[in-house]
Amino acid sequence: MAHVAHDFPACQTVYYYYNKWSQDGMWDKIVALLRREVRFSRLPMGQQVAAMLMRACQQDIPIPAALTGGGDQVLQGRPGA
Image (tube, rainbow, N blue to C red):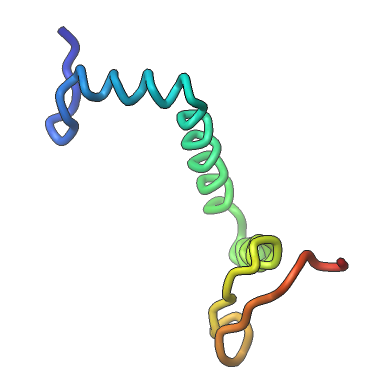
């Protein structure tokens, strides 16, 4: 029987979710998200801020006040649209 780290559930439970998520595409989404976050963390700080602003514009999410020089703002739509 395979063993998993002590802070994980039983091996059968881990396999169940891995198998389920592999079949429904969730595992690919998790890996893609982790890959994106690792690549983002390796960018120089200026590029991180630019990438964060671009993502916020695409998703209509609030921009932190520290980046806008004032209160939180929501940038609507895509840049140049």
